[in-house]
Image (cartoon, rainbow, N blue to C red; front, side):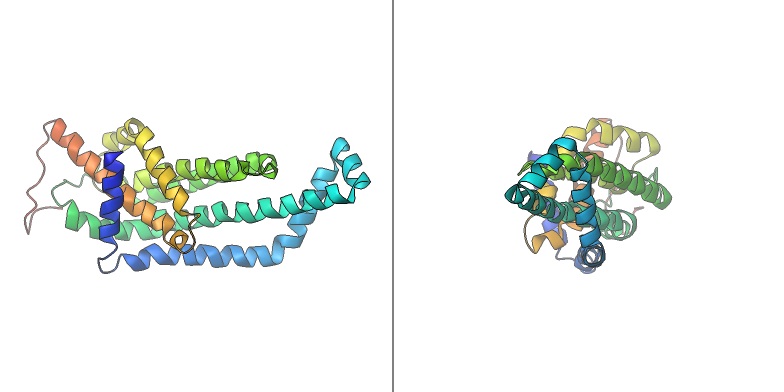
Length: 254
């Protein structure tokens, strides 16, 4: 828990550095605009499609046709569930933009300033980052799709969203945070060994998605927190194995 709090603190400190804040903001703004446009054009057919799907259940059809109040209640729950589902959809879109585009640029700035003593072994690549983000996003959307019927139960949708987003964060950002500095073996092993705290860190970031205004920075801030958490973990792991870190002096390899 202490390491997670340290990662959040360092991420907050990094916000004050030139060129970092803009990369934290634009992915969420782009994702939000995309899903607002999608909602404007698709809201009515999606609502009607879900209601038709519910109406295809025999027991539900008999109840809905026999009770106006019941039909109105189900319609309201469907609309609430769709609004709640928009939040993780905006988040996953922003997270993918962060993982593929913003985080590599943030990583360069942060690593040069705070982790210049860690040798860059380049076990990952931008192509690997894009593929990892794509797979993570597809699995997230699959989990979201499978869980949709449970979103009609009040409160369950939020819990499912938090769990899926926590998983997405650790899957997408864990790779990106290490891809420049870890070798292939470290890149495969460290996320596996650190999965419990990574999920906890990802869950903490997922909660930020439900805080107004803060949620605009949440996906990229989460990526930044993962950079600090994973690189500090890599530094400690190498020291524990007796691997000499580089002297963090001007001109030292980084």
